[in-house]
Length: 260
Ligand code: BGC
Image (cartoon, rainbow, N blue to C red):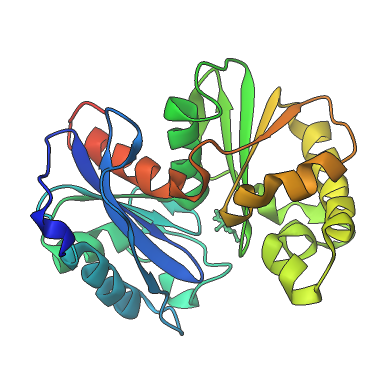
């Protein structure tokens, strides 16, 4: 069945999560805070040049009969639709007016936000951070480490805490789940590295709640119990790896002036 045969309700907005390894999207139901249809995923083209990624995004959106606002995440700094860093994607993104490129390429209104910020927005609205006041920090442990920092539900965008320095290195090289796979670390070896990272994060930001996102959040029971105690409560993301898509859709709904 083509997903397009399912009916699209007005509470739905399309979200696309662009990552270093995969690009996935689906219409999201913003009343319920979940995907409205099964997501469609393609591999991120290599090299992940802007035009090649645009084609992949067109394929994901084209899989559904979608015509309306599209929210997109990007795994780097995003300010006013411009992509300003590219740690795990092609350097051609740096300084690009990517929101305009996507809007013209898709022929639809778009909103573009950092991937971790999108996941954090979804978690705070519908998931593990719902109803939580104070300082809440979402960390995605994936190809890189992404961060989304909230104070009483208000996001400070583009915090980039994956690039804190840890033992003289970029923290994400030391503690991402990609680093775990690359070095073939056991869960307990990785947990030791996460302990070092979370200690620095806690020292600098004193969050009351840390939410762990990214694909590896599905396996939280394998590593969260191995961590040293923190002052912060630490929990897996409620929406798991769909949070980026839902958060992207929230950003698009907001910029289109639709209730999210
Ligand atoms: C990027 C962040 C991104 C994170 C997760 C980091 O390398 O700098 O912007 O959120 O990876 O994709």
